[in-house]
Amino acid sequence: VGNFPALAFAPRYSPDGQRLVLSIEEGGATNLVEMDLRSKQMRRFTQDQSISTGPCYSPDGRSLCFESDREGTQQIYVMELQRGGVQRISRGEGRYSTPVWSPRGDYIAFTKQAGGQFLIGVMKTDGSGERILSSGYHNEGPTWAPNGRVLMFFRESQGANGGPKLYSVDITGYNERQVPTPAS
Image (tube, rainbow, N blue to C red; front, side, top):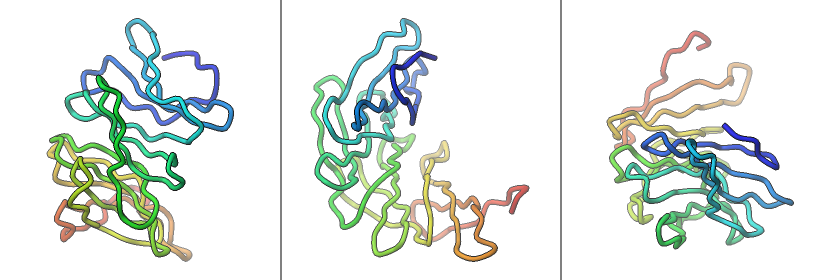
């Protein structure tokens, strides 16, 4: 899709499929940029010395959620793209990463590291109502089902049979199931 001057990673399409937001490493910092896929024009969203990555558009394409260490530890932020304002929404203990906006626009799913565990959770888009849905040795990478009410993630367990496996959990946190795959 483009020729980037440095390491480019964590791409996500806009809801209309016409833009791509991604992270670009620049001299030890990582900033968020958007590329218009038709014109190849770039738009910079962040420009600082922190590591900002994992961007994800809101369903209406007007906002981004992303993770950044701009305040010292990995936290989740929301940016309104027209106004450019950035607001931290994660407030709990631990480090937050891999934010993903729900298709309905009502929640942001995340991975949280706290107390020696990797947790999968959701919070409202203003950071309120944080709920942990699953915890384990290494849970990560939440992604939403199209209905916006079920998440999938991978879990890696300790020990000989600890290879990564896929799991699903609904937003109540009560219906967690391993998803059968050819390797599981």
